[in-house]
Image (tube, rainbow, N blue to C red):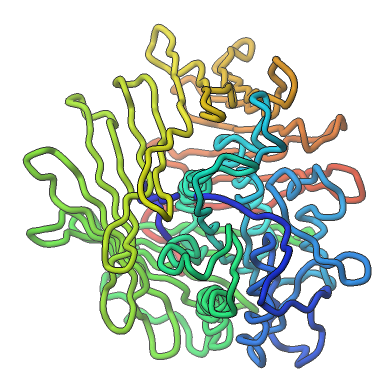
Length: 549
């Protein structure tokens, strides 16, 4: 749970680890220690190579830490999201998940710094992933990891100080972090480690994206370990006592959502989310099922923020001693200029500490106009990122202007929208600024899918050395006569390497008489031994009034 829901922040990348002062011992994990200890899998780029040994030491006696290694202990980089889905055999997500027999209690993961890079320096060079392609890939990765039943920890990418264009461009890691924030906002049960903002506070410990001092490795490992330890505490404590009515004083829940994952032909209850209260204030409890009993994980408390703040949302984590504060998002009341300020804070040393804020303005009709994002760095707000719509419903610009030597405006992406006669978006054209020119990045077009309320979206990306588009994603949506979404299917063309395979993601919806979703099902395409197979991932049912606990 991190800087999400519009509070996204942003910056760039991971080279191969060359020289570093941090210790690293290659290997496929450390099988020593108590077999009963929880198993933690670390998925990440070369930066994780640096902090992983320190993380292992920090978690010694609490968990066993594993990672993927090749022949003779050679380090394997998680790379980009295309590699994760299966474009590169030997380092795909399935390879990572099968390390040491799989069966993970906790998985920490990171992608992004290899997605932002370029293959070379030509104007026709394609970035490994456009922001939109990265978003679609990451959504699959998150769902694939969730399907394992493990608890997840997301690690945000580190910044790229500098001002020269090259394989990676300053600012892109920040932009891709913001994309990831919007994906992770859908999953409140996933903890987040913000290495991006932490590194802004200590750029002297960073060489390009890597750490050049043991202090940097220790700090990164400490932040990752802190998040993992929250989960381990919950798993260790377990269901020592049954669900208590006193956990909230709200009475019966107003709604309940239950998620069951499929495993070995059975449906296993995994997550439960209960909501209490109404418009004036709301409490949501997120529970995780382990070994046949429910464990408290998070409590989300929403309500009015008093005279200064319009809304407030506090996230609390369950641990030894009960609930404790974790993160808080506060929305200030709009001023005379109409600006909306959202503030993100973390609970540190017994007090709330400012970490991020966004300042948003809208056109007179209420549509989005501009948003600036700031990070708290050494007691001062540092402007990191700006999104700006030049015309209402027209073109959106993403800008980033952080460099360690000062500020300069780096316009990076422009997204132009065209609409049909009913005002619906029918095409999105993305461009990126590279080498002093605006270069095509991607095209997202909407087409009629035949008879009935069916629509098809196609994502085309620009490839190196070719002046044509190559189809990457195809998304089909089926709606009923009332416009409600019944089914969404998504195919990824590149990872298939020419093979026919089932939809990468297949999501289905069912509604009650009032138009509320009462059931949602997800199936995923998984690549094993060179073949794609569709597997049911989970089913989520929601009911008003809460039902049984």
